[in-house]
Image (cartoon, rainbow, N blue to C red; front, side, top):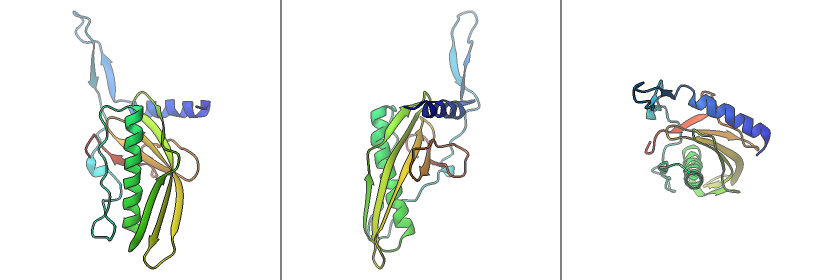
Length: 180
């Protein structure tokens, strides 16, 4: 991993975790310590932005997978492959009329880096589809994710992996918790 990517990972991990938890001294008589959430940012399912599962089309929409518990390199890679396929699939069905064929390919698989608070991952995607009365369309992009036990953020770039930046207009909150 390049020094620039490690620096960005460190900055993003710090920004994403800022204010999420603190170590308290606990009971001074026992020396016990506890970790308590402090000002943990809420992940409101109403703020999730992703294409809805398409219905009423000649090609069925895809359901979004649940986030794995516990998070691990392997579980994240499998989850994101399924999640991005559903995201791209449903986006095409939402935006194009009368799609007769649709294919979503993960070009090289996702690669991930653990940040301490979650995982940053990116993968090249190719979407190919044909509308009933139009020209076939092929599109390639890089899907970039930050996956934590709470929120999952997605950012799409054209050619290079990029770190999702929560709060930016282009970064989408795509899932909260395990089931939303």
